Length: 315
Ligand SMILES: Nc1ncnc2c1ncn2[C@@H]1O[C@H](COP(=O)(O)OP(=O)(O)OP(=O)(O)O)[C@@H](O)[C@H]1O
Ligand SMILES: Cc1ncc(C[n+]2csc(CCO)c2C)c(N)n1
Picture (spheres, rainbow, N blue to C red):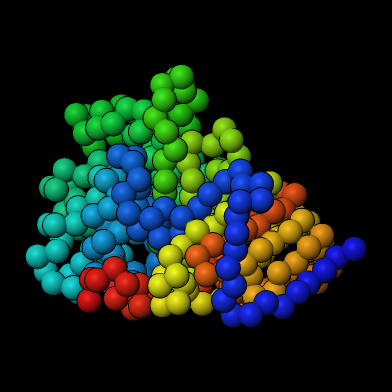
């Protein structure tokens, strides 16, 4: 029988008897450095994050990449926050079909030694092309820097990156590549849904990437099925995060049990066609929330950027 119980605003969660197969630390997984492959991916929407937060994201992600027209957005945003910034925050790569990046931005970033790689295929989005670049770079760091823009780094300008990724010897252990993308959600609806499909494309045990999105209002990620503990410290919960949604966007899901939501559920079938979805929920667990589901699902967690800035002592 399915159940929903309403909890007090804050409850203690004892994790010792729960079957935890995945752990997500909300603050450190996103905002601290986890590995030398961590990547900030910038997509083509206006950047409106508080500048100190952007700086922190940039500094904690050793690899930075712009999808095509995102390079224009980066440049504009940096100028807006002080002209000196354009030479301080120089991305490693700009990748895409290059139909959106402006000519003067190409010239500027070539001068700054950015690898600007053309990939023209009309069967992959610029977002996808960037993910391919991120994986290729993790296996072959810096090799394109030694080659030339003029001959497209000796890579087939149609879909060379796809072929190069197919040839990767994944016996080499590189660990998981954590990618935080800004500009993925909001704006054009098909682009936003495409971004959600990338969450699913980059899920599962064989995936090389863990992809997460940051907007001005939300952290959006895939919660793995089969027992996930989401951890945070109590001050982070109180200051920085608001509502959340458990969103069965890929397929219908069963929430087997949750512990630490304001509205905890048990044996709860959820899908978009049935109209049964846990939106407008929130974390009640003081420092953790446990979710066991039969498959992966999308979760959005509302956050307050200016409070995050204070929490991180960046103000
Ligand atoms: N209007 C938009 N709304 C949401 N996301 C966008 C929008 N425009 C671009 N993006 C994101 O930025 C990436 C780079 O987009 P850009 O505009 O530079 O090239 P594009 O040719 O329009 O994109 P694509 O070729 O991938 O459709 C896209 O792949 C997408 O992820
Ligand atoms: C069935 C199908 N639908 C749409 C596209 C178009 N498309 C998908 S990704 C992309 C690249 C954008 O730069 C384009 C044009 C396609 N190829 N196949």
